[in-house]
Image (cartoon, rainbow, N blue to C red; front, side, top):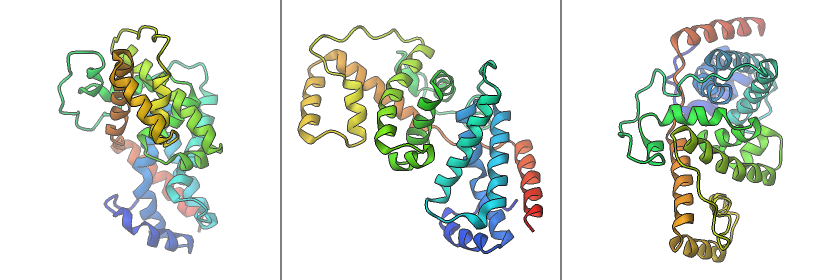
Length: 277
């Protein structure tokens, strides 16, 4: 495939040319998106071999059906939708198989921050990426995909709804629960102590914080929540740990495509391009 140095700003022109049947433009587009698709497969499937298959199937679908792409959504949203469908098929075929995660920072540089003293602070240390991979693997598939798409890949809630075929309200509701679950799994992986039961006067601050991030609460409710958190060590701790968990998600880079996988993808896409002549 073409070089992956193509600037994303060139995508609209490449997309228009590819839809007209320009094979060189299509090859550039495939190169531009292969790392993103592979990285999504790694985060969703865990197994790099499964991620390679997902990326291969997704890029081949793109090569074969580009002329049919109507542009109702962005190309990246469409690719996430296609990749998600292949991830679901892969999970169904391998249901019951032992989970495995290649570290998310394999073949990339590690974070420079040193591990901190407490388990929650360790979430921002050099092993954060492997920690997130292990925690994601413990989430239910529906929870994992909304966290990956919204908090790691950076899609909007509306885009996540497009990818998953659900409403924005359903995505946000699922996201609030998934974020709280991810926080618990992360603390379990790094050896954190489970939180003590909240005092009876405490609201569900984890859900409230997640709803605040999605602009679902009014300024008055937000101010009331912040006032409570400021005076409650228990809720301060909960909110801080969720913020750290989401900060780690935002720091995760897209995994590099290994050389052998890159070559496998190149051959598969070349075959798909040949078929489309």
